[in-house]
Image 1 (cartoon, rainbow, N blue to C red):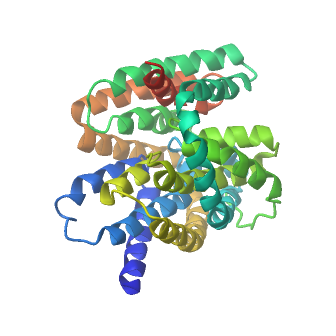
Image 2: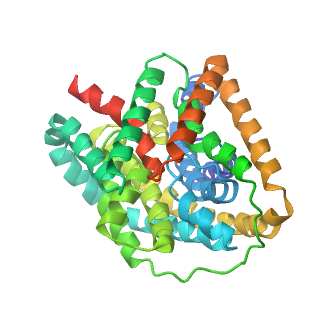
Amino acid sequence: MLAELILFMLFGIFAGTLTGLAPGIHINLVGAILIGLSGTILAGINPLFLIVFVASMAITHIFVDFIPSIFLGCPDSDTQLSALPGHEMLREGYGYEAVMLAARGALIASIILIFVAFPSAFLVSKIYGYLHSIMAWILIGTSLILVFTEKNKLTAVFIFLLSGALGLCILNMGLQEPLLPLLSGLFGSSMLVMSIKTKFEIPKQEITNPHEKSIRPIIGSIIASPLCGFLPGLGGGQAAILGNNISKTDKKGFLILVGATNILVMGLSFVSLYAISRERTGAAAAISELMETISWKSLLLILIVVLASGIVSFFITKMLTKFFSQNINRIDYSILSIATLIFLVIIVFAFSGFIGLLILIVSTFTGIYCNSFEVRKTNMMGCLLIPTILLYLL
């Protein structure tokens, strides 16, 4: 059985590498596909093997996804914050260091998760009933913190409400995979279109190992991640902002913080499934479909897979980032961005059809408009937060 578990973990690492490199492919989409296949093609496979596959794929995806986020300018909703300081470092010739800072944070978080998982599960199981009764107000309070820590507060409120209205419309259309065109447009294709328009030259990249201290950003991620890992509508991006407000750091430290929070939020979504039977990520939803109840032994197995996958994924990310760093300046960035945009359109059409393409266009223009203001892109996560708040209020 051990051999099969290792084999499925390696399959998951390979799949996560592919989805991480492919712009616009979110782990939630892959989770939805697995849910659809679990009752047919995958019906004869031991659910435990599939859980190992999902967990290792989700963790690897997070590591590798920092490469297109920084090098191609096509982040998803969780890694879009890394694109900001990461792009700045890329233009300075330190794209390799930017990715590896985020990967280092993710690796450290994979280790920390082992120690915080079961205490977090015990605490949340005791207080979640009370938290659920005031969930809407917790989400409103968190949203206000995210918005009012901006310098341009009124602009941030406007973008939050605008994206929220867009999210309400799209999520109530009954479309299959509505998040794919919505989030791809707001955070992916909008940045690609803007990068095509600017037409900048990527300088030769230096292969330098980061030496930034990790203590402050890791502390911030540990404090903020549980809030976003156990509450609906909040993800790694929001956790990173909260964590940065708790533990102020520079742009390099912020990349470490983003990497750590993404892993912790994903890992704690597995803990949430065990402790309170709530699905906070697409990967957790897939695991929930594969196994009705998660025992402490299953959770322990998932945590071990997270750690092992994190270690392997760190070195895969390092190897791939070195390759990108050595070759990216030889490629016409505009052509690369156009090719990435075409690929994104094909993916959206394949899973969401013509309506999905229409949503992608609307979301893209909304993202371009919102990106023209000097506020954080994470305010566009109002597209998920506002519908979630209303769900708990009504």
